[in-house]
Picture (cartoon, rainbow, N blue to C red):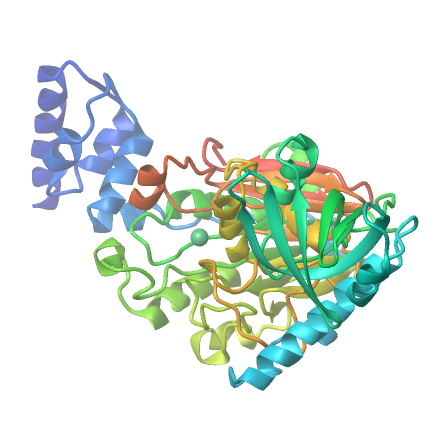
Length: 502
Ligand SMILES: [Fe+2]
């Protein structure tokens, strides 16, 4: 009976496309003939060639079972032998920077004081040690001559443009407050001042103008020291993906299945197999599921409307990744943890099956993992948004530039009062206390890479189609890309599953 219906549908599909002067291939017809509402699917495709990919997308959006059955992952084991399978892993989750199970904040005033004190002490100490920089206490400025050169350190409490057009910064320190001014004619320092956010701890070189007022000549950030990239001894790789958003109608299941098949050796290219065989570590940088109630009206955008079910599906994918790969998973703002940074690891109750696997490790955001002797800082990246919104010189299409700005701040937070909330923990987990070799992030749904002072910044793309919000924002994501980074050479390679046939 079913066959008769399908054969009838086949004729109708061909006729329908002929009438619309569209070309459709056999594979697409075979898929569509299984779908009762095939005409609705075709109506939405206006191009002269009806692409198979377009059909699967429309079927998925339509919630069709046909799309799901046809997107089942096919793991091609074949003769693939991974080099990484024969070696023991060498990694350490750096518990000293891990907020999971350490969150002690009650959000009281005392917590804020401890948080600011910890932050000020760490960042001012970094600045004090800079060569050619000799900061004086604010209390000594009064005794200095007008126009005397001086260096100071302070925390930014206010920033504004004066009536005369000069950028003005109010700084706080344990010895009191002062006002620092950048002349509107000093283009270069103004550009630097634009990147300064509230709560930043900065150094200033300038000259005294009045007892509590100085003119800024240059701004010094805590920053990373200049250093060459450190390289691992073993020829192994770490792979980065992020923002899978499992459970969303826009989750790119077909592409993600291709990735899962590929990481199991599903490639015909010998060169690719060799590279693939070196993958010993995988970082998944948050927004693992789409979540529930993350934004108003989200329920209509969900394919899976139950949070546990979303994690069950996510877990099924992770279970298909070869067990010789050590997997580190941090949360994002769509995951089932608090939205405020620092975010603790996703709790066992959501991902029981994965907690039972010895190669899967749940960490916070941010978190630090030492891999093959190299230190990787993993952060989903919520504060990156605030960097774009608060400054003029950054672009969401180049997430690596926001990452570099945060490295210069030595602080992943963008201060209280912007969009991203923070919990004032007694230890500030957002500070970049060491010099990372890698900074892995996601969140922007846009890939980006940069090497900055020995640190390789890598922002992953996404596995979610362009959202309505992104359309409104004019943001075009880079979906379906897994990035591998060789730990010995620090070479970055993109693996694009958006176009790739595996
Ligand atoms: Fe995301």
